[in-house]
Amino acid sequence: MGTTDTPDPFAIFHAPPPNETAGERVAREEREAAARKVSDRIDEELKQEKARLKRQKVIRVLLLGQSESGKSTTLKNFRYQYARAEWNAERSAWRAVIQLNVVRSVMSVLDAVQAQLDGVHAGVEDGAPTPTVLTFSGGPDGSETPSSPRAGHISMASGLGSPTVQTAHRTSSFKHPLASPGPMTPTFGKGFTTHQSEALLQTYTTLHDRLECLHAVELELMRRLGEGGTEDYGSESGSLLGVLGKDDEVQSDAADDEPRGRDMNMQGRNASRSRTPVGGGSRVRREWGVHYLHEALVRSASSRSLKGKAPVRNGSANNGRSSQDTAPRASGDEEEDEPTRILADCREAMQSLWADEGVRAVLKRRKVRVEERAGFFLDDLARIATLDYTPSDADVVRARLRTLGVQEYKLQFNAPTGGFAFGGIGSDFQQDWILYDVGGSRTIRHAWVPYFDNIQAIIFPVSCFDERLTEDQKVNRLEDSFLLFRKICASKLLARATIILFLNKCDLLKRKLRAGVKVREYLPSFGDRKNEPAVVVKYLREKFREVLKENSPEQRSSYFYATSVVDTSATANTITAVKDSIVQNYLKRADFL
Ligand SMILES: Nc1nc2c(ncn2[C@@H]2O[C@H](COP(=O)(O)OP(=O)(O)OP(=O)(O)O)[C@@H](O)[C@H]2O)c(=O)[nH]1
Ligand SMILES: [Mg+2]
Image 1 (cartoon, protein in one colour):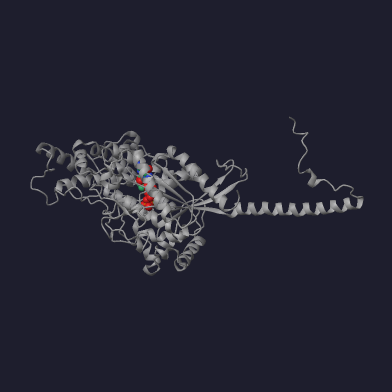
Image 2: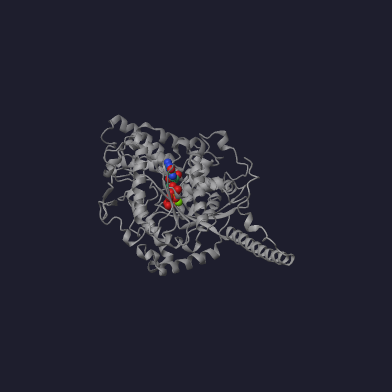
């Protein structure tokens, strides 16, 4: 059936009146022309307004969560995908961070062996997984909410995690293996025969002497990287309290949303913004006493001689290095970059330590799982401990640099060249995003609140169920995350923000379950469910969903993803989906759709 024969049912409304005179026709056409003009003007105004909104409106996304949950790593995925030029420009500067990560891992191994030698019980060190049990108790409405069996450990009523006295994560001490007042005949204790103990002691003493110089490397790299290079969670100088002052400290309960707190902090925020305009790179607020990440990275690439600290074996500093290692670098900076040279020199010793069966037995015995800790690179020493090492993309993603304060990153999504086009928006679509990456340790959480205003979305990564907070070894990570998540959901300032939860570190979850770790030992309410990754993820998702539902002041969009954000290719689709849903919700709010 041809459609052209069908009369247009609306044509009658546009048809001139029957028996229209010539004068009436002129008048009608004038009226119609005027109406068309008005309509065109309104259309143009709307178009301009839309363009203005598109130009000026910025999507603000906040990455929140506890320390080491994966906020900065999630951000790296965004930058890797959408700011590749900047990513590449920063690449070499990450070398110092990775070197520091390597040194810290080596020291953890040495510390564990030393502790075993000293007869220190396993469990004193971090990483020893005495279960901290997370229980769910019935809420007033019968729902399960997390509660701590150790009342008082987490007092969310007093803040998003009020500053607490922390266990400082010290830099490793290097004492001689036999210097400690240990047993007369050194022994590695039960499970080690005398012969094994002697062999281990021999290895350890040799490697200890050989690797002692790493202490100087650690100090130098920390100096270059600034406060982010420390893992000292106890210092309030890094907690921003010194600048905001105790009186200004933002209370997070009902007071989270109090105008006083907000005004005070918005002043700080605007003041800082005027001095540190967003754009191009990473920014940290200077007035809070922390450095620009970018500056720290650049500084890390600068030189400082560690003369006299380099190990000399058999009378030659080059002994044991390949010709590739000893060849002068094109820039002539080999001499300048002492940490790199020393690490290259220590490569074999570090490899021997990590490969030693006795050392592995001690680590196993003490349940020190270095390979599950932040910034683990000991399997890559052959590649990393070299003079010409340049970090790969995967290295940069996995590098651990603690975030202090709040860092702002600007991303711009263009269509079509920027790789982003949102359905129906058109090819002129351009969107500025500011992502705020915050330090997640408890001492600095109060500094988040000024950023809660006008936030489009929150990405909240959650990490493992069986670990404890670095800054407070008594507190289970999952427990802390639940309480924090509840607090964030309940914040009135964040009531309209889209919540995106990443159940992160699924790779570690899988590895732990494969190794026989039982979820119910940490989470009794998990009960007799199958101890399998998919079941655990589903269970946790339900729990977080309940928290979100019960604590959201308004209905809002939420998304849950199981992630392993160290894997950029596996995370690429998630990042795209997250971005699209954030934009979609933004457009809905801005009435574009
Ligand atoms: N295996 C594994 N490691 C991860 C994953 N996500 C993050 N990590 C590692 O965990 C460590 C901590 O991650 P970050 O992104 O620095 O954590 P953060 O939340 O920014 O921590 P703060 O800056 O202290 O608040 C890093 O060494 C990451 O490489 C993951 O999905 N799997
Ligand atoms: Mg971080």
